[in-house]
Length: 136
Image (cartoon, rainbow, N blue to C red; front, side, top):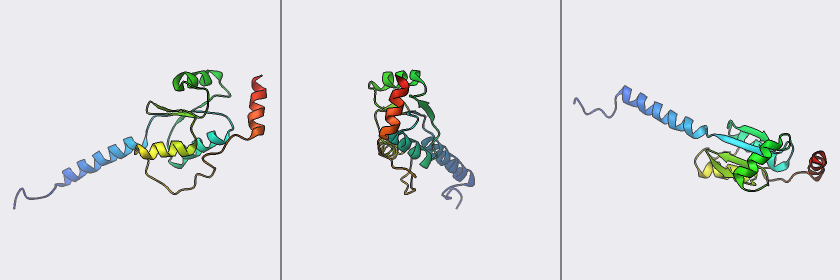
């Protein structure tokens, strides 16, 4: 019968395009990561963002003191890493916490892919001491 078709080809194409646009939007949040040059927690954050192939702006707070000031101003505290995702600041976070935020907010789908590094590891004492000495 005319008019009883469930969907036309153009309806399906429109639906597919809409679904793709929603999926694309979900996969491309605006991310700024305030990280240390070498730090276990910073490495964990980088690994999570790479695991999900997310583009982000990295601001190295060791190499550029202005980025540290910006991070502290935005987060209200001095600890790193801090990651801003679509305007929401995650202060003093590990890679595990970033991954949980991304999944809870449906920005990524859960993945069993190994990130390649521990997602919640502290800075090595030697690296941390070296960074402190450079700043004195």
